[in-house]
Image 1 (tube, rainbow, N blue to C red):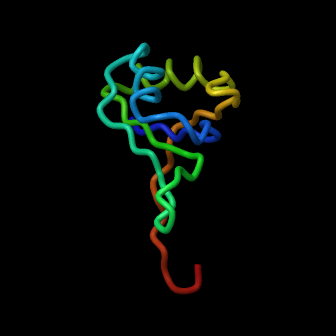
Image 2 (tube, helix red, strand yellow):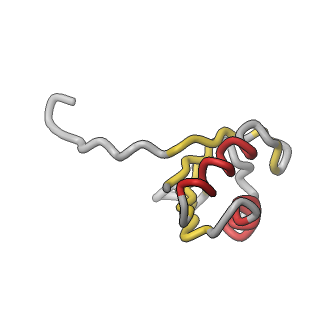
Length: 87
């Protein structure tokens, strides 16, 4: 299951994000979204967990927790919408 993480501190690393979630189950991938021009983090990330159960526990436990001085928002990621003409 893919999880959407919003409001992570810009100074946090992929390794720190991985550690925060692996307590709840196997983390398959961490993807930190960065600005294409500057390479700086954009403040939201995605975490792919191996099981839905682990992802649900992580979502419940970590939503609203403070990391790096900021309270994060954690939700199940929604499928990306296809961009198209007129949308």
